[in-house]
Image (cartoon, rainbow over all chains, first blue to last red; front, side, top):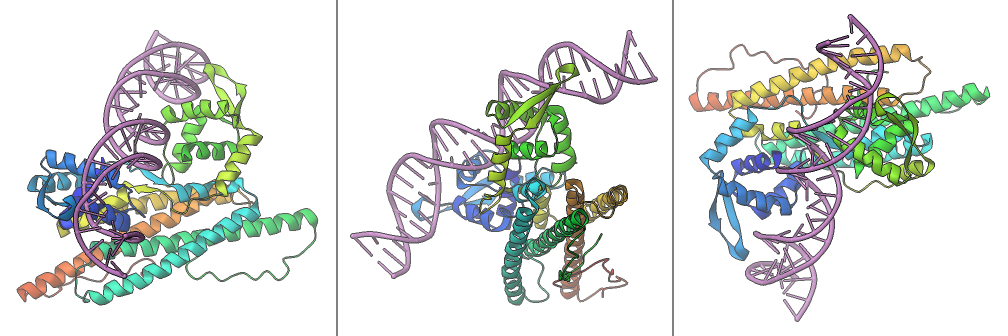
Length: 204
Length: 204
DNA sequence: TGCGTCATGTAACGGGTTACATGATTAT
DNA sequence: ATAATCATGTAACCCGTTACATGACGCA
């Protein structure tokens, strides 16, 4: 059960309320790692408290309760971290859709891939700015924060995905062009300039 | 509900039995995109048949039933493909664990990261061989198969992840070294050679 | 004949999503 | 005042995992 350990992990950084944790989940984990709603988080916090892995350390306005991880909570988190399973669950609907693109017409598939690449470039740009900001605020000697680690992961993932999308796009375009050329014995590649890819383009 | 569309997608390539689809899921989708067991697949196939999106086209030994996608199934698949949600579910326990590494001692975190990088390098090597084989069997003019697309995605993902793991490892090492140096005014970096990274190492 | 694989099914349980529900506090 | 946000809770439903269950077929 990963939700439980995700919560312990976030609480290991600093105490937080269910509300805070919901936001933190969205901001830090949702995109790359794990997703959870408040409707799951509140009950789980109650259970964690009942099991003595977290405790309420403050109460605020509007019934706000701030939780902190306990020593037993830290033990449980460490135990979990040091005992990874052999295989990991992965669920990623975007990737599923990309893999099923072959069920569309080449033109539609290409349009989707362009959309994905563009959306990713935008996210990449936003993240790049965010990272610059993060790096400016922390001194060059500072330890890499979890946020910085995640941002770096995001940077690299976005780049990888949009590169792949462009690669896939071009492969579809190439074979479509070749296909029609060999079928028709007509229409040489015309003015189709090979777009130089911005970065590494491995495995032809 | 993505399972349903994943099944339609796989059946769009060629007819298959529940058993075949279970294997295909494992081989093609499990690692990067989606996971499902036979206990989920068989009932879903029954429902899909009841909804007229697939049909039984052959019966074989041991009660084997081969399903094929119907025209209505293709319509539904296309409709789904062309209407992506704004945000996508992601669930990846490995990444969650990597993000929570900051809860461990630097040495333990570094050991984990080395483990991840090494495991990924091994997978990368295996996939590289597989791709070479795939590319040799298909002519250079052949259209990129779904398998080839997925393999390329895997190649790039593995590289990205193991690069990130090494980056994170080195950042932890650097700050640990600096931290102890400034705390102790002792032990200059000794013989720690900066490992040249095999590939691009962006965003210092 | 016995082992491995092919082949399907389902019940119970637990996790996750959606929707409904409420109300306090703060800022404009 | 009133809108936005803070803050929590829970019920119903659906999805997914684990475990149990069965048996046919092919090969050595």
